Structure formats: structure tokens, C-alpha cells
Amino acid sequence: MIYRSLVRPLFFRLDAERAHHVAFGGLRASMAVPGVGALTEALIAPRDERLAVHAFGTRFAHPIGLAAGFDKDAIGHHALARLGFGHVEVGTLTAHAQPGNEKPRLFRLSADRALINRMGFNNGGSAAAAPRLAAPRRFPLGVNIGKSKITPEDAAADDYATSARRVAPHADYLVVNVSSPNTPGLRDLQAVEKLRPILAAVQDAAAEACDGSPPPLCVKIAPDLSDEDVDAVADLALELGLAGVVATNTTISRAGLRSHATLVEACGAGGLSGAPLKARALAVLLRLRRRVGNSLVLVAAGGVEDADDAWARIRAGASLVQVYTGFIYGGPLFVRRLALGLLDRAHRDGFSSIEDAIGADVEPAPRAVADLH
Picture 1 (tube, helix red, strand yellow):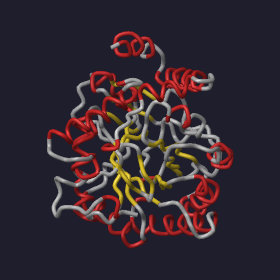
Picture 2 (cartoon, rainbow, N blue to C red):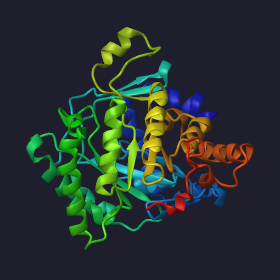
Picture 3 (cartoon, one colour):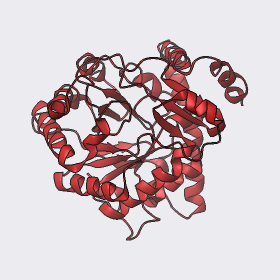
């Protein structure tokens, strides 16, 4: 494949963050050429009604989407959708613009098909992003919000609420990110007693901004939570009437890596994404499904490299599956390969559609996903 044999080696000669900016800028520029975006989408976007799923009151052409973190500032979601993503989640956006952590802050572990990042929510702020989010579109859009680094913990709820007011009117679903390891103290907010007022404040702010009809609200959790804490967050989501949970963010663990220890140590602190995350991310997803049944929409992320990984997440209860690191390593046809691979596996396992397979590996058997939110 040209991407793996030629394009990727060239980009991987660049610093990881520089390569991201070059590739993302090139994508946006090419898709801005009249006709190129439409032609690209026509050629590679998966199109089969059996792939469609329903979640958050919205029809998704297929379950494979782009996770938050790639388009942090909502500057290229339209271009990304042309690559065939079933949905795009932008952000993380914060109430205050911030530069993020010092560079270098993004690293590749090629032997592990992984990335380590300590970006630190670098973005221009939710106020600047709101007009871009308001532009008309033809694909489902999620908006991920986080706490500004300068905001103290006791003001976190107001900080999240500020961003929610700005972006909620333009989102098909909204995600509260309390699970990035790259903002000091952020993961502490996953504790139920701290998370409850944040989620309640976001709910109120979104409802106010949307005249009582806010977008569905999710919380994104870390894979490093204990099983008991996963249960506690799931119970809180049910208590507050959230729409779903995104599982999972990156991990601070370095267990089981094949990359040389010197290289891993040189990367320093940060969140690990990619193949090493898949087992724990799947375990968290299964635990959530057993805890909440089909009362919440579950969005799977972390370590999805191929159609087998995506299929396992669907059967474990995910309505939507997000990719990031796998996309970096897999290239522009990655989404198409995953989506068509899901069809093959559904046919092999005797399902007439992807939607019919959601939660198939978890008892009791779920109702149709169309019954969800």
C-alpha cells in the first residue's frame, strides 16, 4: 500500500506534531479545491445501509468515527468527514484559549503502534471555535470540552459550563472530558463527588443555551480507573440522566511495551494511545455495558487497529467506535477498511446489520439501539 510504504515513512521522518500539522493542513487545503472533497467522499466513504446505527437520536451512516484530539480547534472537521468518517468529535475545547504544554509533546512508539502525548488541551478556546462549529454540515458532530489549565478545581464546574453554553447549540452530542492525564489535577475530577456538580452545571448551561433542548451529554473516562470507580461513574451517569459514556481516554500505564525502555523514558510523561491500550479499553467497555445495559450509549475508543478490534467493541456494547492512533498508522483508507470489515464480520456471524450485533457478547441480550436516546 502506498501510504504504508511511501507516505507514512516520509511523515515519520518529521517530528510527530510537525507531521500532524503538515498532514492536516494538506488535507484541509486539498479538500477546499472545488470538486476534490466530493470526489474523495464518493470514492472512499462506506455506503451500505447495513452499516447504519442510531444513537443520540441521530442516524450515523456507520459506527466508525474520529476521536477528539485530532481536530482540537474545530478547523478541519468538514475535510475529515470527506475521508468517510461516520462522525467526527472535535476538541478538547476549553473556556480559555491556551497554548498547551511545552514542546516536544507528541511521540511515536512505532514498535508498539502507539503514541504518547502530553499536549495539554492546546486550543484557541471555545468562543473562537463556536462560529466554525455553527457552519452547515451533513455529518454527525461531537464536541469535547475540558477544564482550562488556569482554572482552579473549585471553579471547574463554571469553566465547563462556559464552554457548554458556547458550543452546545452546534453539537449533535457533547462530551465532558475529565480523563486527560495532561492537565494537572484533571483526572481527580472523575471522583463522583467532584464530577456530579460539573455534569449538573454542564446540563444546566447546555439547556439554557439550547432553549431547553440540549444535545445528548456524555462523560469520557480514563482506562486507569479502578473497576469500582468505573461502576461509580456509570451509576452517576444513570442518576443524572446522561446520554452516554466514552470509554476510554489514554492511559498513563507503560506496562507491556515492546519499545526500548530508553525510548519510552525519553518520551516522558503523557497519555499512551494505540495498540497497548486495547485490552483495558475493551474490559472497561464490557464492564460499563454490564452495569448500564442499553440505558446509555457507549462510545468505544482506545486501541482500535483493525476490523476485528472494531467488531469486538460492537459486540461488547458500543454503538459507536472511535479511532485516532490507528488512523495515524493506517492512513486515509483506514476508515473504509474498518467499516467494510465490519460488514464481513456481521455476515460471518449471522447478523443482518451492524446495529443488530451491538452488545451481542453481553447478557442479557440488548434491545435495538434505536431505543436508545
